[in-house]
Amino acid sequence: FVKIFLNLNCSKYSIKKNRNHFFILQNVYNLIVEKIYMKIRKNFEPIVAGISAAIVISILAFFTLETSAGVWLMFSFGATVFIVFVLYDLDTAQPKNIFFGHLISIIVGIIFNETIGLSFYSLGLSVGVAVVLMVYFKVMHPPAASNPLVALFMDLSFDYIFFPVIVGTIVIILLSILINKIILKRKYPKGFF
Image (tube, rainbow, N blue to C red; front, side, top):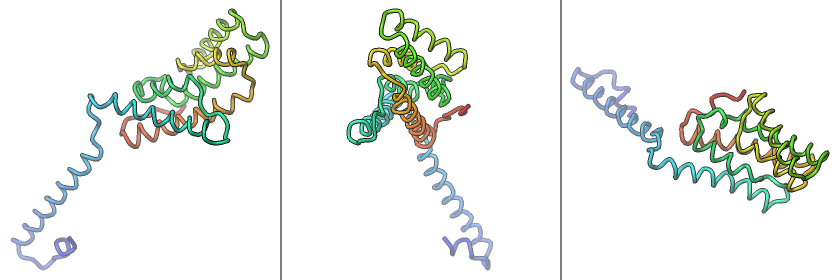
């Protein structure tokens, strides 16, 4: 390659020949880059989405079950990874909505648990208040609407906010950016705030 580019004292024929080699190399390079950055075909997208969701949930489950780092996984994260990898272009799949939607709704659920306790009206009211606050603050994330139910049925306290809600959503956001943007070359996220 160096010989091709540094051959300055050449005849017209050899310059033309060298240019042809250069264009051939450039075409080969472009083909390789095109294959690397090739979009996934539509019929493989469900498989890729499933594998991506499995990877993220498995990582959170590993930290929850195999380490002493605390709880990193909660039920609503399954629906969150579905939205992040299948419906990634929706507003509800964006990092701001994931983080603040889960945070607001778990706080609402814990407040209802600490003040009213488990009853048929606290279950309904806590979900309703969480939905109102997510819509009002424009951080709508449908899986997060189930967090007040989790907080009430599992009798959770404020310790649950840091692990798994804050830490778990940050891990989901970071892994979804890594997988969607860097590996799958999708336009994700649209924005952080």
